[in-house]
Length: 352
Ligand SMILES: Nc1ncnc2c1ncn2[C@@H]1O[C@H](COP(=O)(O)OP(=O)(O)OP(=O)(O)O)[C@@H](O)[C@H]1O
Ligand SMILES: [Mg+2]
Image 1: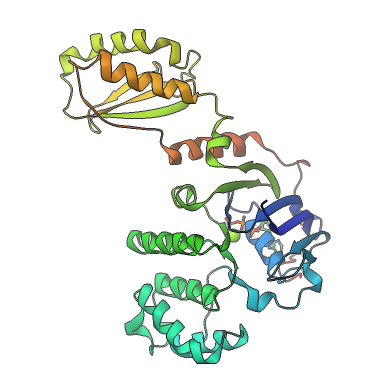
Image 2: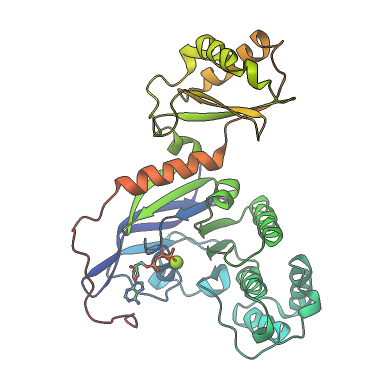
């Protein structure tokens, strides 16, 4: 049975009379990777800061299960520093070298002293920062500082890892490295809770997505299940060779006719006028279908068997990212703040 390790119960945070996090309920099980996704100002960082005990909730509670204990109110758990790893906001690292800084964190996170040197070297190597070990952190680029922040979060090998926007400021190669590392952590059974805007990164690594808007969770499920709320689903079908432009129109109408029972009959004209589109640049079709799993199989069968002499299918996929993008925009646009006036009071930025 899945074991809950983080439980947010009616968690609420107000800044003055502005509700940044509005009665959130969420459960994260051991070994799961959960993505917290939502627009700017939705309440992601505020939620994470409450889990990190940087902010105190106004009401509700956070329950945490650390090694060998029961789910406990976070306020009564003293060992969070050594058992949870946090990356919050862009790290602000003082005038130390990378090595000094990581040694310092290793110490406060109570990582065994005799293993710390190796651990630091191993992580610096993985994140391609070995050459910078004795450089002052203030000379690091934004992306390098971000990587160091991630190293700091996982240095003490915690079971629960909570990352706020880990990919911010990273180049594509570094993002691939982080993704790779997150997968490695998953394979080690770690529980990961990650806030991000990067829908691709999230859809690639997360088991489930929690969508947050105006401080409220508006959806929490796998990408596949969230996508079931979409009125239409996409399939991408690539062909071996480009199609002859002159034969395209009759071919498309033949395809629409043959595939008709499985295609989306009520397609929103803002998405597309017809349910099959050919894109010569990508050398492939985009098909809007009814989203049913069985339909996918039937469509592929028809494309392969009945259009054999027209084209050869070399790939047939249901893109995860574009589904998530559409779920995201559909759900975020559809959710509005409860009270229309969300005017904030005085400057309360420093309120804890
Ligand atoms: N200390 C504070 N004082 C007043 N308002 C705050 C404070 N911290 C956050 N807020 C407000 O709470 C809301 C949620 O902010 P939060 O930083 O949690 O959003 P976010 O989802 O992390 O956004 P982003 O994607 O931009 O990082 C925002 O409207 C923000 O202005
Ligand atoms: Mg944030």
